[in-house]
Length: 176
Length: 78
Image (cartoon, rainbow over all chains, first blue to last red; front, side, top):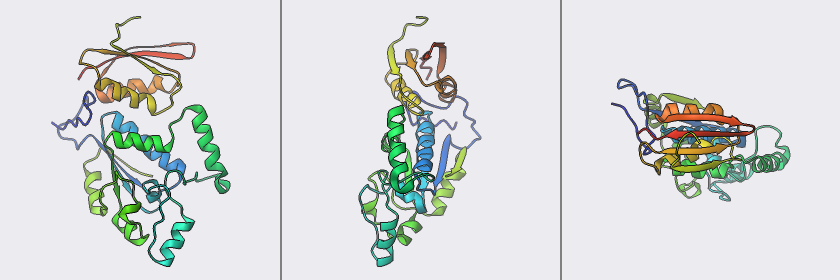
């Protein structure tokens, strides 16, 4: 019986013994505020609905799991990239209408006024609900992110095979 | 009103996904058979709470909308 019960009192009602796990796997390629927000919203919502959740962060998605204020990069090019590609949930802006940071400010303000959870709050809930956050090893090497620039709750870096294994046993797979 | 609630949850002013996140936390704190009574203001819960109950296997006892407030009762089943 495949009946994942990550959360006491929250488990699958109609799990199929032949089905894969009650699990959702996501690739988070985007580092834009709006898309990262969608990813965390779906992740936390799924976890609150009793699903196991895996988020695999790659390329621009690293900005979502980078510690605020850290500067990755060991070579000149890596440092230049980090300068032009500021990461951390506080620093990322929307994919449209950012207008040099105005959009980020405006969205944060509107979300706050309407009672929508901030990215940081969603991240904290994801941690609380045991959402697994995996950084892509290749991106880490290539873009020169050190483990010290990563948030505390991400796993050790993994490759595509690890994600495929997660995705293969999931009911839902998303690419964001 | 219709059910004797064991705990009362105020979800007013919260937007998706916070109502179900709070429900998931609250249901951990009650025994099987006990009931959560909650009030929310986001119309999205009209669709989300029944869906959450279905995925988690808990029972939506009743849901009603009075003006802008949505009130519902959920019984922990497992």
